[in-house]
Image (cartoon, rainbow, N blue to C red; front, side):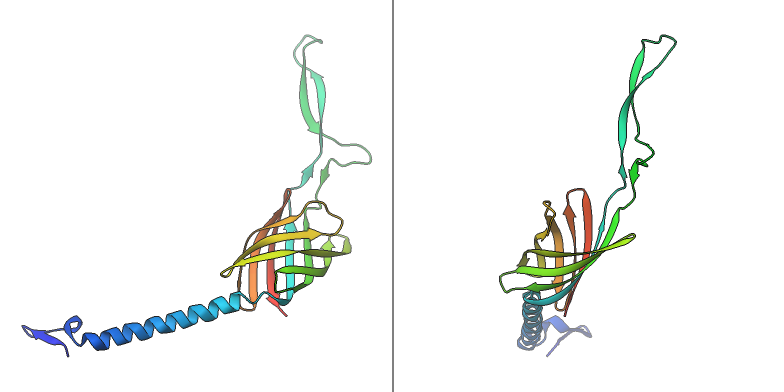
Length: 182
């Protein structure tokens, strides 16, 4: 019961046993939901759709050229210029690729996947493999792309139940990906 003082009711001075029961029940609900959330996070084994967007800065090709500066013809300076020729436009704007895969993840975190990469003007099929490491709901890992010596390093990922997302790097390229449980 709450105690009265000067016409005011002090709830915290009431039945402490009841209050402690309510707090304990609340904590039990939170613990149960945390346990079920961790259980959902720990279920990486199985089939996942993997959607990835790979991007990088445009590749500017340049060369160093010696030029005359000032009135004296022997006074030269080296400048960096774009490398344009009849067969080379001096840049590479093929900077984005979107990729879809169907990953099969084992309980150990190792996986394999057939993938299709879509680039401006062409499509390419490739296989990937690697390993995911899960800590609570966060994960990292490495993706090895068939025919590419530079691995993809997952810098940060998060999975919760049937969906996940993350970012990765591969040399000078960046990736943003989404996972959806099949």
